[in-house]
Image (tube, each protein chain N blue to C red):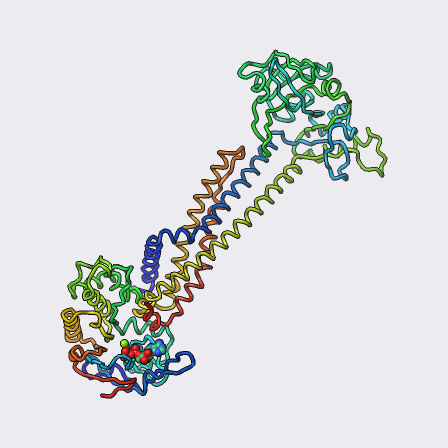
Length: 411
Length: 226
Ligand SMILES: Nc1ncnc2c1ncn2[C@@H]1O[C@H](COP(=O)(O)OP(=O)(O)O)[C@@H](O)[C@H]1O
Ligand SMILES: [Mg+2]
């Protein structure tokens, strides 16, 4: 009989709590607004954070695995990549020497600059990337139309260009650009290929807004220099990136005649470091928004406490009647706790709905694809339930401590 | 059954504090009530009848004296122990009916069972049977504000007897009713007293109502005068 009581009382309380809250729809809704906003923003925030991490991961994968960047300058200067031609320490010959190292598969000297590209009346400012014939391998980027330039075209300083999808559309519309001649820096280049479309990267930059030309042509005819801005290196495997890094360091120190006690005049970055930096800034963002959300959950909890106190006062008579016919302290406590829990859990559910809606809207209106996973949903529901129990406790306790004779007199 | 003691009050006193000023609402009350009695407590308004009722009904504790219910001293029990006694031993009927407005009539009748460990099906059955007994079964799913005051008081009586409590305490049960409905309610008390043997303690300021009882106790200024 005792066991049965628990079940009976619990479900009746639950049903009654639900009815009571429905009867005061507007008030219940206003009460849970804080929880709705709190949970909604938690869900939306985390979906943004997870979407950003995924996008960073994707763009790193799309750049190719085992990728290292050799950059001019010293990492002790803060590792900041100075502007074009500011730190002339790396040459194309360095890139060729690096290619011969055992742990290195391919390399690509890189130099880029923003230039106007003109075809007939059309004119588009884009990123001109000087690269080696190994570009497609290192960046895991295929050609959709035509071909990429080969090693012979690099050594012969050819005026050939492979253009990105966006540039192709801007200049040629629906026409096939392959075989046409465009002007870059007033120099004619034959378009020999179009890169496959990659879309936006994690930071909202259009990766297809690019023109790739041989690094030699870039150095001699456009930049007028033999210094490269960076050398992209692909190690033979994931495990060999560290080895490749030390081989490159030894080689370049030797080639640049750096004495033992002097620091490097270049530095090497690997993609996992870059990814870590990007991820940690995404995390900072998530933590910041998350704490705002937590505060609004707290405010939501106080809202619930407030309305439960009002409810307890309003229902003093009912509490008196229940006590008169035999309700014990714990019965009254339970009744009001169930009510505040139902209220806050309902707020949590509504918040999850709003959060998912918000996250979908962000996906729809921005280049970022947000991701909603089960974990934050479950955690915020549990958390809203906890808020309901925590902030509902004081009003429920107050109700349970009433004197039945006095409560009955209340009108 | 008739002569076994149900209630024994020994020198009960009740002093309220209004601010810092003590007010003696009950003074040295001694009273014995046997099982199966129908007793009327009469007195003018303010004479301390409701205060005495609250103590008899274990809703409040006296500030002095001893209260024995079925030979057990209940004057100093905890609030949960008192709740248990109210649930098992006492049925309540008040002037203002005191039904929970948001519960249906049958749910109101089920309420004491709800707090005493009955399975919902069983409780519903017992409440239905009790409502049949007072001829209100058909209205079981209505809410209190959908029926008349007389009917509400009958539902309150059904709630008071559903748990088979040995005693019923009624504080001015006809105070909000016209004389026809009032006599209906009083006849129901007579019937319950006769057929179920429940002890009935009735409080009223109205001599006509008090006359339904078989024993009359009169109060004045917090004391029993006859
Ligand atoms: N909770 C209380 N606090 C202070 N005084 C009270 C309280 N309850 C009753 N009284 C006082 O005690 C006296 C008796 O009241 P009550 O028992 O309600 O009388 P009756 O029911 O006979 O009209 C009255 O003077 C009333 O004002
Ligand atoms: Mg009174």
